[in-house]
Image (cartoon, rainbow, N blue to C red):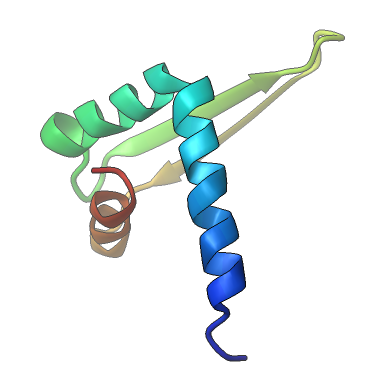
Length: 74
């Protein structure tokens, strides 16, 4: 599996679109990076469909997660 520049450029464009459409999520991520994300932090995400079904997941942040989040959310 090699490096694919085309996919990287697509991902960059999708990230740009996501930032434009969901600025509060990017702001939230930046706030977490600055103040709250450290190993042991639990991040929970809940999604509710238009029909009212809910799905929840969480993760306990590891040191590697902190590094990844800091790379992706600046």
